[in-house]
Length: 623
Image 1 (cartoon, rainbow, N blue to C red):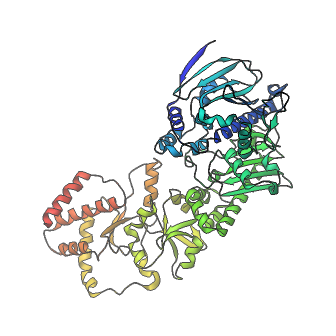
Image 2: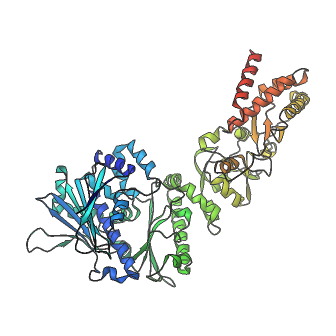
Image 3: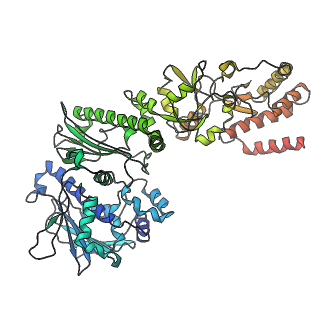
């Protein structure tokens, strides 16, 4: 018999180390993970047999069987599902192919105690076996094949694969239990775990009898949870089904269990998570909804069920109208699926709206996790975009907590024509932007938009209830006309006007190739300068995002440099502008102030060395 030795993929080795050295109070979840995997293997074979009936010939009743050998101290989990070939053993048990898992493992290594509590979320639940076993053996025979193979490992960094024999298709996992895991050799303990964690499994989970003449015991209800009346399902059963179907460990924020009857007939059992999946913003992430037809599992890769902005929704959809042999190509253009999708989207958005109305505080926590994704729908979904915009909440300059646009309009002065906003990398950084100073001084509330998607939905939704959106970093600030708070020009300001014109002229001469224009600012109160985009030009933060993602070629757009005539530094420079022989000084000052404005915007300086030299010269002249 040939036996080959393999090293675990690096991420698996790290993960196994974390599992083996973590103290975890709920080791029993290993059994939930293995039974769940066995159930999935049976689901996949049932679907494959729709087009290839010979795969289940002579054995069409699926089940998961548990057995114990107290003398050998082993617990065995066996299924008659689709099984694995030798290569599939290497791929499924020796590697973690899922994108982003490497980063996940790195994060876990920083906090080993939380490792096992989230292991199933990443599709690696099999490795939880090593919490209770010092050796794991897997014998598997792929449906339709005659050969079987045995995978063996102690979880220490390597595994072996050898030829084996198995009667019939499927997979048998034998756990050689550690001394401190002997409780899982007791029938009452296994019974308790299965009824707690796997009652929702839609095929029998059977405990084989260890006594002569005694009957085997089915431990679970063994019926699809979504087919049962809601009144017969406990909160605990819903939560465990969510853990199973969503590969999650948090508790769902909301549960949607509904049956639609009429022209179309389908059931949905959907869950909105309370925690953000680690790969929520991974470009490869897809919907994790499972599609069933007449209780037969079809696929867990059905992008057509929900739009991308609802990719965090977990659960199942079971259709009575789709054909059982529906293909991937048929799903992509199926009118039945399009109608189901429309119903799902409407149901999910209605549920979020209801929850937002009933408990604003809980909704704000949910929005922290999934608001950035839902805002993709404002941009992408022509049908529901406006409803999502009404649902959206934002941080503002007037509050640390969230406000809806309706709340903003309710606080807005009657003479304010626009909904003002500013975009940036974070709410904390945005709050310090000099462009906000004049708005804060006059009590004008501004939305603080820190998600990259904000720059895009604003291009689709240009107004809300008759009020247009306007960036405070774009165009003229229009602050003098707001609330009639513009003060009369003082005698000193009138006297300084010629000086200001001279200074702006000198700055224009020095910066003629570097900025689009230079003008006095009505939006600055504390800072000497800031950069803004001209009316009609691209928003500065949007341009930065597109440049970072190589979606925009060419050089950066020229900006307008605004100067604050009331700032002490600008006043002193205005006085210098009246005197002869100060052109070099004013030129250096103009370049320094421009660099300062770029630094405030988080931009890289074109020539840091020149900036440093100018700064040193300028300071030397002032000392």
